[in-house]
Length: 499
Image: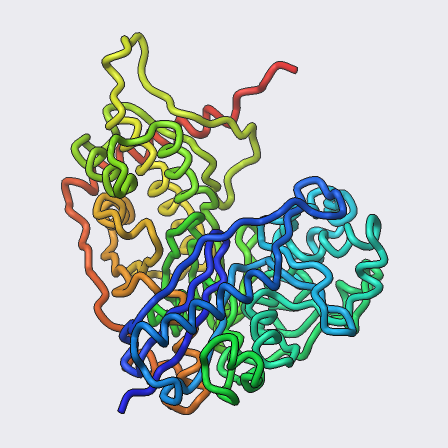
């Protein structure tokens, strides 16, 4: 008789529920895109979501999955929640959501002036370089512009914690997602009383911190009725989607280089102690003995989406697959076309952030093709991965022969073989398209005692990785193209705009 785990993944652009058996096999997945609304308090860049609507959708996904797969609800032994990082919810004393916002709520940009003088101390404590999308500047925005909201807040929950609260009634938090708030002491894995005191923020709103493999509570009768899941099963907050994805790839020991290639591409290096690199962030992993150094490429999959929307392929079926196939027919280097579409490189000197496509001139309208533009766009998501990986390895002195990767971009053979060639490393691509949800299920499998620990769980649940080895002639061609791309990027950043 099989045992099953229902794993929820609260993504930026969509929510999903996946059900796995004890072997890590995907029994079924339900996925639904969602969107956000402008902030009701008039914050510039502020976005919120309807928490009741999101909860109903997620519960509906699990209920339909159970019906469609035909599994017996009593065989589901646990539920797990992972989520986009930086998103958060404020709960009042009556158990109502006062503020529910995704990671892309940028109201905090207006408060960076108050934070930047403390940037070094904030980075030392939280591991995070100040930015308007994090919780600290958001709380400062509420303190200044809507103080009644902050005054009425009883608990601050990150999004995976929020779903656990909805399902169990218990308010807890988990380190890998709490760390994305910039209100968390990442080396010590606890909420930072020092940050709260320095900015005169309430300290009683932060919930108890538990590990990803510790149950946050039991599923209530009401939540069981809504979700179709069995009452009283344990529910786990299994952390940030990036760290959950690492667990879903079996990245559970120090010294492993990896990336989650999605809308953005965080390049991660696991370490056994919290290191503080100037141009990288330090995150808690889901396992208590590991941390992750992160150098995020930022716009990667998003830049391909931008290219798709401005230069749409003819097919109405799978536009990204068509773009990849068209681009693959063009030689490495895209015939001299280079794309700069918003990626970031750790340790790069400051400069103007100009972008677009660059190609040799003179030219006529027929000489630069759509295929070259597609190829340049794909390569622009690969080159910064190399740059960020090299930064992490050089700064730590760690040697990593293999690179593990998951995420939507790995559906492109051009992308994954290109990574192997650009990095000159063997690439291991996740064996499932639901890597984050699988990582969430992994934590729940450990927490229920189904397996004795993360290594035991990964051995039984993580399978089927695809291997890509570098092709030597491609390595040399990509190295030339990469160095040209970096040189042009440097020149672009040195251009001074006339004001």
